[in-house]
Length: 193
Image (cartoon, rainbow, N blue to C red):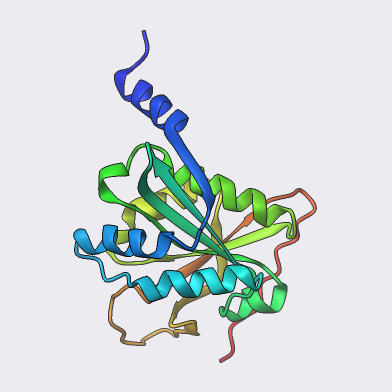
């Protein structure tokens, strides 16, 4: 007998459409997040469109039965110094609307951008926040094979040192990497003192 939760996940996978961000998407995405109280502006998605057009970023958008469900981006030019120096693309800004969470959508979005990253890089990076709002993401990334890059935590891409006092918000993150191909050799640079 098939578990009903498993069937729902299978049904959701069949109905999920993932495609590149289009010109008509920014208003739809922004409105969806504003309805749940998140401050994601249309300008943010217009910037993603511009970066996608110039080849600096890929943005993949997921729809379930024609309804926006979530998105993820892949930056080919991350600002995090160890990734930038090693030429490691970074998965950024993975978000799935609450009504669509726990249905495999984040997993499918990550599958898509990891496949795209593997076409140009043996390794991909991602950052995860450290406050409790990121608990699910922390577990998901660990299950997918992401490991800490060994450089410690950052705040606005600046390394923190022992004893530092900082605000625990979305900008306090740990960077992780995942080997996408066997020949990958993870390059880790020690942060500057």
